[in-house]
Length: 287
Image (cartoon, rainbow, N blue to C red; front, side, top):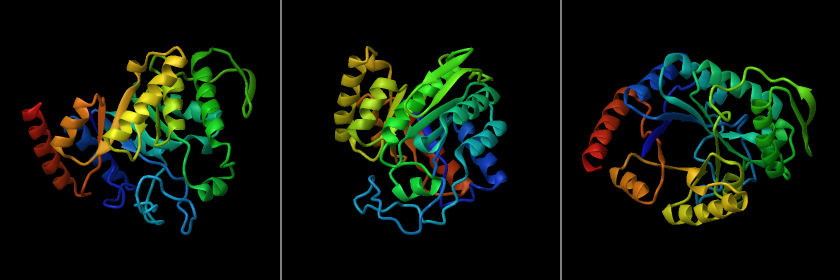
């Protein structure tokens, strides 16, 4: 099973260039397959929106948490590394213009030598969508269309698109991504709608905030949607998150999870190295 890691938000100065590059190099040195970062354009001091991934309904992040733009941060990390894959986990797709985003993603994929993965979701904070100036109610439809828009621009030498939200005729978007088929798209979310989106359009599925039983239920929904779309469900990778626990790794692997995304318990680089070296040794000894 692939092991990935996310940046230690609120525990370290990830917005500082020296720390960001040192953390990225550490993740690569430790042998992690990929490095993931999150996105919120703004954090709202007061919100009525309910955080769907915790019983409290409140985000674990304070409003003043530093969350650099994920694509700029990953570009910085790409320049400091050579092998590790680079992922958003997740980017809020309906808050982005898909034509502009397709160019940014292709550029980063090209500059990094084909290491980029787009983890995307539709967002849960109405107040953030309003601050950005986009409609919250139709975010699912716009996300579905945005995936098609980007893949059209990546695939076609001269592209045209006539959708509900996006229209263009005979345009060229270059450079193209290095990766055949374009940047892999991993659909994140906890809902059946997200599972269906992953089945219809995703290269991967990241069932956020669910346990193994919840993952199995959502995977069944994803698989049915994939078959209905004429796609192979087995080709859609499953990513799950969790703490650095070898027993959890074993449980995920037994359940057919393809990638585990680890959440650091500290921002101190020395402690991260010591903890994860011990974790990797224990995982290797039991696998």
